[in-house]
Image (cartoon, rainbow, N blue to C red; front, top):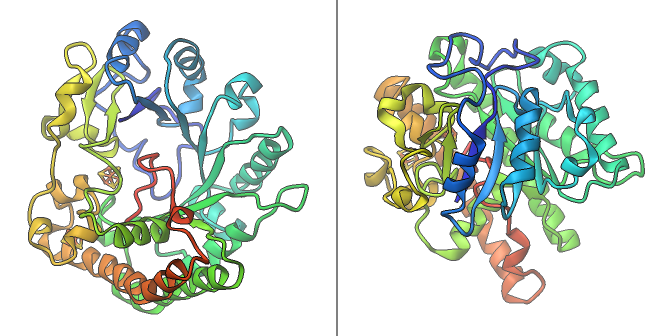
Length: 367
Ligand code: SF4
Ligand code: SF4
């Protein structure tokens, strides 16, 4: 299991357009209020435990990150960060991380539009610093994609960034669409953006990705593509790819355990226990998605996309169906190229393991 620990609800950026962190006070303490020893006892109940740090901006609660890494054994440590404070992380903690999911949305114009002037340059500078310091873990660019985004332009830009030595800056890339988190009315023309920008962008990105595989026999880590190819190759019916409610659990600042960090404000629906009174075994009874997902013809591939959206239907049934159109486009596009991948695997030129990725690290797979 991966335990996603909210160290603080505070954030040092605080005005990103798509983020609702500062809109309302969460029904939790601003910072961790439980005893770290209680967390340690709880986590010790899972021999395979992994820990993720989340916020707010988790590095605003750097003292908790350090104490948890010092005191709690974990198979892996993951950090989801806006990257601004990465240059302040002491080397012994930095090198203890296995994966950093770094929020950046694309080139300067896209990133700074969403996240404030100067953000892009600071994040890229800090990503390059990680490489100069010899950080050996995974660094994945985590994009939020919304109406101002061109997924092809923005993803291609990030995939092409280099460190000071001319090597790839980012090992992986994930994008999450800003759908059903804010109000639907915040979109001026969702349909127009999907058909004229997003769908052609996904198709082109997939085509480039496949072109790279066929040319070099290497697989660039693009989470939505890798995740879907792995699922299709395995034939095993997918569960929620983000892991929420079955492999990925959120620990709130007061010790409540919820199925998803975003859904924590609605803990009366999403709470699964507390670190004070539960054990990891108590979480084995998963929280599952409800209709329309179990009856959907691509449920075994999609896995239900998002537990939060599924249970709350923030855009209503009609809005939910609209978002499912975007999932269907992606799934259909990946299904269409699968025979070419299978042919390379059958001829021994490619191994299924080349599509492996760090599951449940916080990349949701289905955007
Ligand atoms: S496409 Fe939509 S309805 Fe189908 S499984 Fe995914 S989220 Fe559920
Ligand atoms: S995709 Fe998963 S992690 Fe993301 S908001 Fe939905 S349930 Fe939570």
